[in-house]
Length: 127
Length: 232
Image 1 (cartoon, helix red, strand yellow):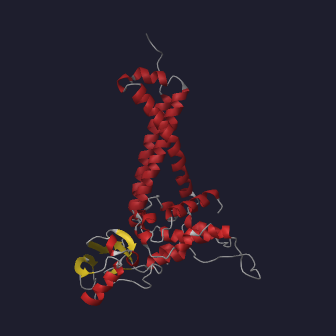
Image 2 (image 1 turned 120 degrees about the vertical axis):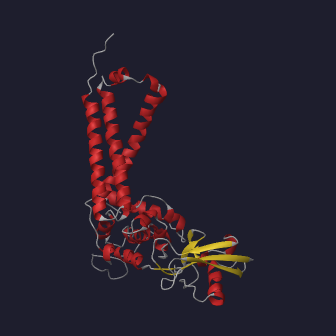
């Protein structure tokens, strides 16, 4: 029977990854549409500057909004790429290497993004 | 009517690469493609190789790519295929000769799903009874004839042959949702893996390909849901 006869229990990781994709997909739909509406339709991109961001980030609401969107979108995307890699790269070494580099890049992006959102200090509004 | 059959030929003992054999034949519009293949084999070129058995859409032997779509040669009429008909072996399986493909791995994956009734409770005195409603629950997946059209049409399977494939899942579904079966835990264990149901990307090619009109993607979805909810 070969490979077909040797099950590899995944302790449910694939199940939760599948579930996460669906839930985050639905949540992201609203978050991304809201983002699009505010940043591109209501406010012209030309008007978005440091002042605009500083004002938005003066309250925790938009920071939380952006942080949730960053985490969900990045993990959603990373998992999507993971699925493509697992689908198409079968040699063990190449698969491990490509997955490792994917995780490293995602981790760096997630860290940088989170730092930017969390540590940004809006200066006091001057005249 | 006159039709031209373009058949992909390949004999690994003689040919370096597959080639196209062209056969012009006279046929009735109501003839099946299988009749045309038989005509070629019996009158034009006896070396043409393909599987066929019951010739009535039940045994699942003569699945092949007909004008690019996975179909049973005994279930399509020439009048629906046009003047020039291309015939190729099923995709994703090793070609043994011409239209004949190696189904061993496919059938091994089918067998790995334990496609038989598993019970642990003591045997009743008479039959294990089932209500018509409980029988209806898995009626769709009882229709599978293991022709291999769905698995052969699945891009996830093309990308990675380790995937058990839609046909195996359909046959697991047939027992998972059978009220008399008690093998749920062992089958779920096989399906809840990266090469089990989770490699299905809901592409629906299997539904398009199935000559028995089984809603394959729905069946796979039901298995995913059963795993998620921890119940069938």
